[in-house]
Image (cartoon, rainbow, N blue to C red; front, side):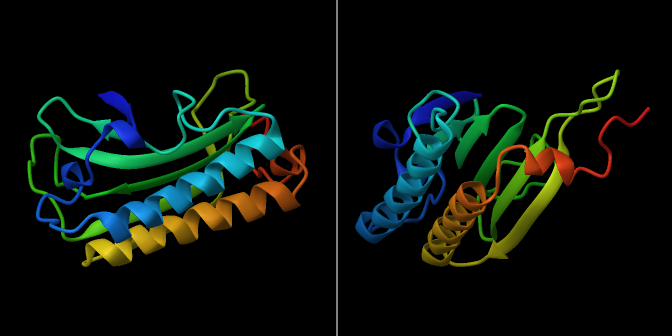
Length: 163
């Protein structure tokens, strides 16, 4: 998988039938701005490569849009993608799924992966609705990340220190 900055990609990778991209790009850029605000607030970098919302492009050409801010042990992630039945399923949407999650790193002796604290997911059949949902989720993540203290996320982890 390759991470490609938003400005270096093409929305048609995620929405192959899209003819007009201006309104979609505006919504995705606004979502990108939400991640940048959250990253600034937390003193972190926006996105996995520091470029904010990114395309994650698979070797056979399909792509998703993803935004992430990681600070300490807490991560704020949003993804817009199309669900597939398996790794070789080459379909594109509809539907498109938009997921948002707040996770903390496992703090047990044996790391079991991220612990989900809050999450949201929604499937949509219209590209513009999917882009609007990405903006909604990015705004929700920014609001949650700027109104809660960073250490409060670990305190809300019911699996903290599990064995």
